[in-house]
Length: 357
Image (cartoon, rainbow, N blue to C red):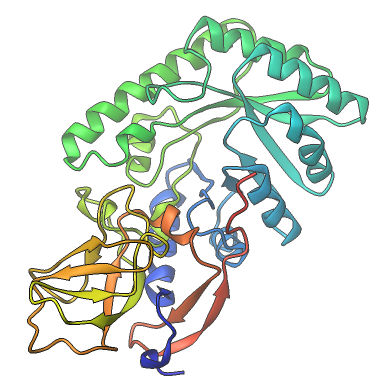
């Protein structure tokens, strides 16, 4: 199929750029002694996850049980679920853990007790890490005594095995300036390091410290506290990560839109609105049209400002670079695949799209 024949809006993935991004991250981590456990909440594709494992990843992360179900049932056998599992989902978790190595994070004594009880009742042992709040102020036990108490509850629970600690510094990912991002990330790693030491001082060995994302993985490695890192967005990047200084990855993900109207003199209208692009991180970038900008104009429409009307034609394509890849990908059922030459090479299902439970 010719690219001009793609039904728009279309989510387009450059597989050559994807492969370069996968290789760059694998190469960057391989010689450091730190394991790579990439987060699949970005790409939501078992095929991409399998390629990451082929390139040396120790396993993958998912955000939700639903995503883990897609990955494990597709043959990805080592999965860490990075958000807390509520009691209503424990049976699904235990069913999944019977199929592969599935580990979880826990941030309270009560959660450890309940999961341990139900795992033990089924004769199972689940690997569990203490989720530590390192500054994002979302989930996670407070560093120090609270985290130690959760670790002790995991050790004491018959159906659990203590596997380490997790701390995600998500609030540092889009700090664009290198030195400031490094400073803030190191503050988070110091909290993790101190908590690890306090747990160890309670005679509980800490085998794993897992942390970081695409913006900060390099600082986690430099600091030395991490035994594994969890970058996700590096596989495709987006317009926000493009602004982070000294990240060696390239945009591989685009939305192809079509011009549907040129009747207003100040802008052209395209067929990409809120239903086709996420704007939680701001407007997407406009590729190959210098000086232009996108603005949503409703569910189905968007405006492109400063496009010369003499050059705009109804049906002509406009390429956008998503501002937030994770939430934009979750709007689509599949990727349209191209290579560096712009040749259409196929379609890839986004198998974990919508797996948010």
